[in-house]
Length: 234
Ligand code: CA
Image 1: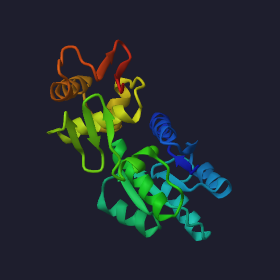
Image 2 (image 1 turned 30 degrees about the vertical axis):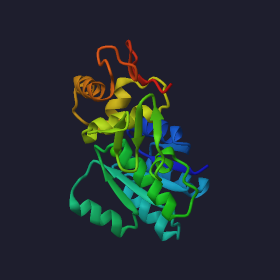
Image 3 (image 1 turned 45 degrees about the vertical axis):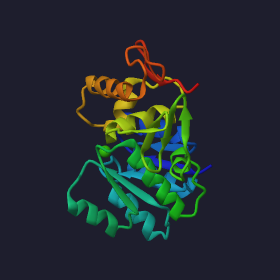
Image 4 (image 1 turned 120 degrees about the vertical axis):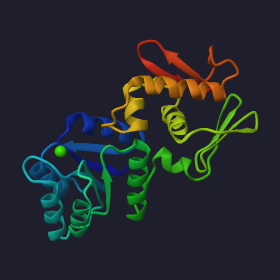
C-alpha cells in the first residue's frame, strides 16, 4: 500500500482529503505543522507528500527545501490557496513535483496523486487509476466508460455535462454506499467552493432526467433522507 503524508494545517481539509485517499486504498498520515511534517517526512518515508504552503512552524517552502537539501527526493504535491504564478514558480524551483490550487476538485487531485506515484514507480492502486484504463462500469441499463467520460443508457449515448459526470463518478466511487451531501460538494465542486447545496439537487435532478426511466421514482440515484445520496448498483 502506498503511504501518503499530508502536511496541512486546515484540519477539515486534511481529514476530508485523507478519507478520500483511504477510500482509494492509500495509507495516510496527517500532520498539521511544518516542522513536525518535516520530521515525519524524514522518518516515515512516505511514497508521496501533499504539502500546504501556509503552515505554522515551518512554511511549506522551507519544508520542501530542507527535504531537497538533504537529498530526499520524495514526490511532493503542493497544495495551496495561493494562486499567483510566482508561488508556483517558487514551489517548482524548490523541487515540487506538482501543484494544485485550492479550491480543487477531488478527481483532479486524485489524478495527480496517481500520476506522481506512477512516475515515481510506486504501485498505484487507486480505483480512479484502474478506472482510467478503459474499464467499464455497468449498473442496470447504464454503462459508464470513465476513460472517455462516455455514458450509455440501453446502448445509446447520454450526454452529461462535466459536473454531472463528476457527480456520477463520485457516487460510483463509493460503490453504493451513502454519500453525504457535503462530501459530494467537496468531491465535485472543490473544498472551498461557494456552492449552495441546492446545486447538488439540481445536478442530481439532471442526472436522473438523463438516466432514469421515471426520474420522480429513481431507481439508480437514490435519496437517503437526511443523509445524502447513494447509487443503487444492482
Ligand atoms: Ca494553510
